[in-house]
Length: 214
Image (cartoon, rainbow, N blue to C red):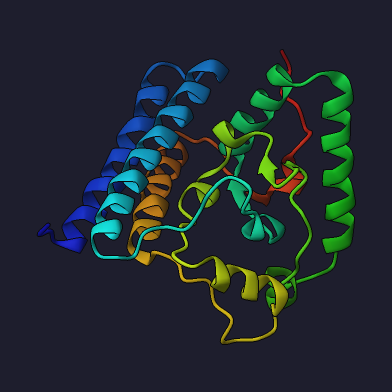
């Protein structure tokens, strides 16, 4: 496969931008924006699948699988429109008791991380409020940060989990697809900001449980 990395970066940034502009041109209703974010997530998934297949041919296949949750214990950042999709999924797919439990876990993790900054925050290891029996309860609605985190070595992720202060303990991530996924999301965000939409970044536990109004 021959490609110009810079050309691909521009193309996928533009793809993200155009997806958000569809929502802007349609009037930016709540459901329209949710639909556009889901389209953006689908595009990211397709890109990750493509690069995963390519990595396999290079003997660098992603080792990620259901039940492997080492990465689900670190802070995960999402944009506010992604949290809208996540909370919409939680609201529509779980009963009150489960939603309350998720919100409780989110509050507990947020309390533990309160006041942490820099490396202390990024190296912290507490389970995501949506982690249940080693799997994500809201996998279909997970943010871009989760979708693009592709590791080729479970051992490297386990070491990063066990030795967060060890600078040599770094997950063996596929860097280029991660960058492409981020650029799709950056393009999406840029279009919304151009339309005057306020976009904030937050950790999952800061936004999980703040359910949208029906």
